[in-house]
Image (cartoon, rainbow, N blue to C red; front, top):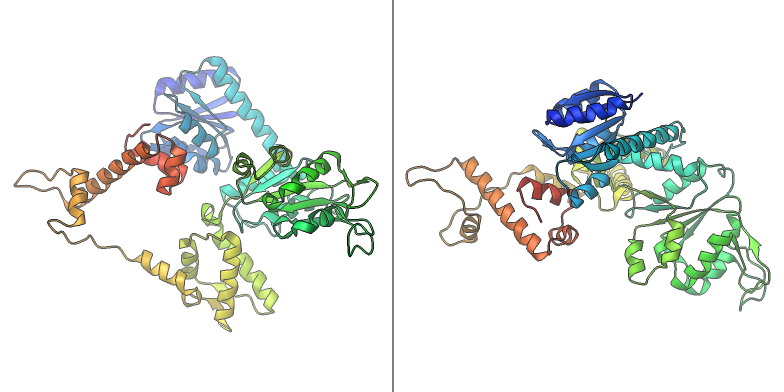
Length: 476
């Protein structure tokens, strides 16, 4: 028997889902708001949550990360009163198991619930695997998802594709998979595809026979053979030359190859893990990467979050790397002041964990014999950013014909009667709300209703744009 939580402010919907779940032999609890639902999750264990989108105190899709972070880590099935393809995509992206409409029949609801619970059982089996993860730091929901993926990958033989921005630790994750696999005692061979010389790619990968080309004074064993029995890690696989992609495709299929100038096929039993920070699907569309090779690389895909998506891990990461760096310099471990941690939290970290470690090393050097890292040890640019964010900007001075008069006119603010005015707070909120709404409408016009294109134009994430449209009652 499983325990199901139903969060919906419509009592009839709660009763309907209760009947379905109880008929299947499960225990149910209902909540009429997000706050009530989160309180239930913090006080009890649940296996699955049916979650409404529109609730009195918030948007259900926004609450998915908080629900998934509850102690029992339940699966989430979004329920909504109307069809919304963008909402369905966003729900799954945010961590929901599935997305169904309230008009769904008994069979559809039962199927969604059974599938979510079966998936939960499989996930529990993966959780039972104790990962050796000494260098993988983080307790955020985003990292928990990554760790689940690493555990699953470690127990399989499938090809793995790690995708993430530069500096997110792709090689570290690949090593973690290798170290937790049955090949841990065998070689872990790294191929940096971005630095392979065009004229020597195949020789480096597959080796060469004596006399294969000028300067080949003896036979050479390639990296693919060196990975025999172990793991072959293709870092930045998007940089692999097209001419080599075809020959490497056959190597993946057959696990054998012929050295340059060689006459015999050589076998190599390697586990393949690849990594990239590029959009390989887009590269395939542009003819820059082979679609058939991508199919074989992405048997199992793990998305690595950027550091700005898991800022709750910054304190643990900073503590870990300060200790590690101090040890490498042979000095006592330094402390980190609360002001420094606050400054680190405010930074967006475009270089991710790699940038963080470089900043910490620079701070340790700047601190000298000081036992604690203080705000003055932060790089100047980061201190300037922290100072800027600590100051509230002033409203621009009103002028009859200045730029702000055009904003007021465009926003169409109701200024009240001749003898009254709204409060300044009401006026300012109306100004911002109306300006935002006008901007969003124009944005959808320019993008032709495409949220993907709108995100590019506005420089917004898909979740942020979707929520803004919902807040202002704007539909495509």
